[in-house]
Structures are given as C-alpha cells and as structure tokens.
Amino acid sequence: MTDAPKNKKERKRSKTENKKTRTSVTAESDELVFAVCERFFNQLAPKGSSDLSANRARGKGAASAVSEWVRKERNRQDLNREKIYPLVWEALHRNFLLLCAPVEKDLRNNLIQKYELQHHLSSCGGDVVVTNVMGNTASKHVNTTAADLIVDLIGKINLKKKSSAIAEGKNPNDVRVHLGVGAGYAAMEVAKRLSNRAGAELPKLTLHAITPGGYYIAEQQKDTSTYFSYFVERSIDVECVGFFSTTVVMEDSYDSFKTNPSLRSCFERRDEIDIIVTSLASSSDPHGLMGQYFDYLKSRNLIEEDVRQTLENQAWVGDLLFQPYSPTKPIYPKTLRTVALFDFKELVQFSLKQDKYVVLCGGPCADCGAPKTEALKPLLTNPSLRAWTHLVLDREAARQLS
Image (cartoon, rainbow, N blue to C red; front, side, top):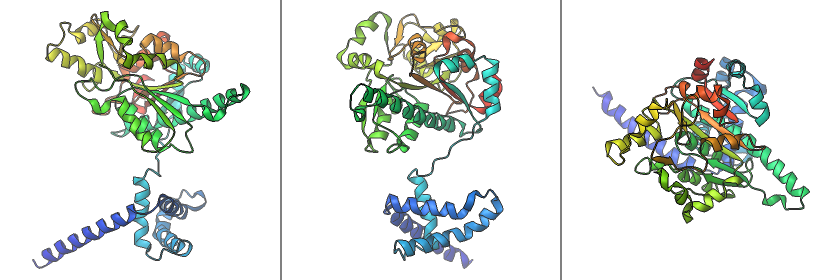
C-alpha cells in the first residue's frame, strides 16, 4: 500500500521532466534536429545492413555515438544519450522523415493488361500505381504516393518550360508550374505532402482551386482554398487562385453565373493549369461529399428534384470533381449544374493534351475504409471516361479489379 503514493509521485515527476524535455527540444534549430536524426539512423543501419536483430543491438549504442558526436562537434555537452531520442522524435514531428509506401507491381501489370491500358498510358505519358498497403492507413498512403508522383511531374514540367523559355529568349526564372486542386480529404493529404516537400524540391507554383469545397453549407474545412495555407506557411514562392462559389447552381443560370467577376478570371486562367489532382467517390458510399450534399438538399426541401433518385435512375456509380457518371457516360441532374472549372468531358479532353496531366487518387474511403472498386471500374473499362493520366489506388481495390 505504501508504494502507490510513491509511484504516483514518480509518474508526476516523470511527466514534468518529459514536458521540459519536449519544450527544450522544440527550441532546437532545424539544422541540429536533422543532423542528429541523420546520424542516428546511419549508426543504426550502417552500410545498408538489413539485419533487424543486429540493427536493434546497434540502436543501444547509436544514441551514445550521436551524443558523443554532437558534444564534440557542436559543443553541446547537455545532449547526453537520453536526449538524443527526443530529438529523433522531433525530426518526425517536423516532417523530416517521410514514409514512402511500397508499390505492388504484379497487380499494376495485371490491371494494365486486363483493361488494355498500355496505349492510353503511352499516349498520355501516364501510369497506374498500386500502393502495397492495407488497413486503415491505406487511404492516406495512396494520397501521399500520389503527391510524390506529382513532385516528379512538377520537376519534369518545370525543366521543359525553362528550356522553352531559354529558346524563346525569356527569363527561365519566371517559369511557374500550375497545379489544379480539387476538394476533399485526398486533395488535402496531397497538399500536405507537397508542402512538406517544398523548398529546393519544388519550383515556383501557382495553385488553382478547381472546385468549391465541402458543400457550402457545411464541410468547409474541405474547401480547396484552405489547403493553400500549407504552402504559404512554408514561405515558398506560390501564387494562389481561389474558387469561391456555391457547390451547384440552377442549370438555366449556369452560363451567366460563370461571368460573375469573382469566377470569370478563374475560368479564364484554367488553360494555364499543367496538373490536376482529384479523387473520386462511390455512389454507394455514405461519406461521399456529393452524396451528402444531395441528401442535405432533400432533407431540407431546398429543391423540388430528388437529385439522388434522378442520378440513380441513370445508373450512377461514382463521381469525381463533383461530376457524376454511370458505367457508360457522364450523367447530370435535371435542374442542377455542378460548379467546377472542368466538367467531366472537359476533364477527359484535358488529360489527352500534350504535357497535361490528371492524377486521380483512387484510395479507399477515408472514413470507413471501403474500396472504391465499382466507381473505379468504368474509369478503366470505358475510354470515354478515362479522365486521368495517372491513377493511384490501393492494393485491395486493385485485387478486386484484377
């Protein structure tokens, strides 16, 4: 019975000490945190060793070795062995460590062969990527893999634009790569990852919102324009083109709506976009943004048309960029028009243009983990619905589709 108060005091003291350590670690410079982390992992697995048990044994001495180095090279006598571990965790908090999901090549090749995609991929310079990840993190890793793919595309476009600028006698330093971003969880995760890789890896960017976020009444944290803050906080050279609009308008007023001064410039600049990143939702998924919005309209009697029923009568299987489609074609409500820089057919046309790319994130639902198999299938089987150049999907969906 006498041990309980003592243990309670010890836990309180330990918690206080951990808080002090955390506070002191957050005050350290990026350079020092990165240097400590780099040397720790070099000590842990020298010369590319893959022996897990040996690496664990080395880990016991890695912190001591790094502590010795930092005290000698940086004159930081306060950084003993125990304080190295919090610095490694701090490197993780500062996004110096980025996990890269493995890819599944056999499933990828099966999809390309089964759906005869090779001609499409060759003509548009695209690819199919299957992340070899399962479980509740699969959606996140599909999106971060898509972001890493986009980094490569940005670099490719930047080099080509700079070469063209030099050939035309223009200043190559004025070149910008234009990225169009849709709304939703996937686009948010892509934006986070891209911003974490900002700096030396990314050139000057112009970010275009291509849809409004959420469904205007709610879900505004998924507004595309809010993702721009990730880049601004990194203090990189970025230009932002917002898209502030309602989610839908009445069909008969759409053309005049586009001439609104707040939107006109957005539509006029859409041809500048080099890369579009978007995702899709299954019509059967209760967490899809568009389905939620139509349910909201029905529950509040805000429109006479039962939009969901109208679409279901046309064999609605999914939507991307808030653009619904059936297994054979894009479909539309009778009275509503989705507001977006590109409708479905225009997105297909965009993906066929030289040096233009559409990266489609096809990971499972972020809320329930359900794969989007039925929504993905028409985008693979029907050439008129292939509104993508690069498709990134999860292992389970790829397995079901193979």
